[in-house]
Length: 165
Image (cartoon, rainbow, N blue to C red; front, top):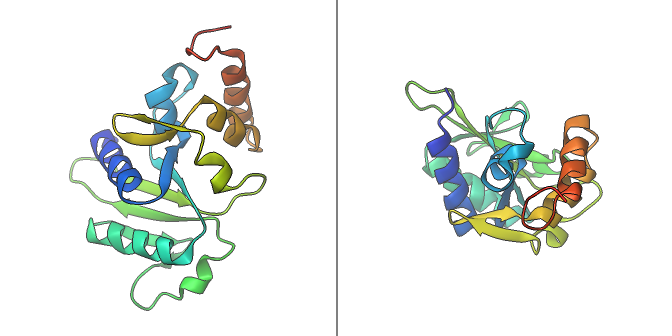
C-alpha cells in the first residue's frame, strides 16, 4: 500500500521550503484525476539546476529520514556532487512501517524546456505548488512516453475549468 499521506506531506513541505514544484501522477491526481489510468506511486518534483540548492535539498531530505541516491550511488558525506551533472534527477526513499517505500524523484535537468519556463505555470492545491494545465501540457508534450502524450492530448481537449470542450 502506498503511503499517499507521506507523499502529500513531503510534496507540500518541499514546495514550500524550496524553489520546486510537483508534477507527475501525484500532481495530476490533485488537479486532473480523470486523466490517470493508475494511482500515483511516488512524488515527482521539478527544480532548477542550481548545485547549492540541490545540495541543500538533499541534506534536508536526509534530515527528514530519506535515503538519497543518484542512480546507483548513495548520496552521503563522501558523495561527489559533480556526479549529479547529466543524471537528470535524484531519488529519495523512506521506509514507513506497513507501507511500500515512499519515493520522491527530484528532476533538475530537462530536454526541451527549462524550469524557469515551467515555474510560472503553477497553481496551489492543498498548499502544494503544482503545474497548472498549461504547464502539464508543456511537460507532458515533451515526453517520449505514449501515456504522457495521451494525457497531454486529453488536457488540450479540456476547457480551462477541467471539463470536456
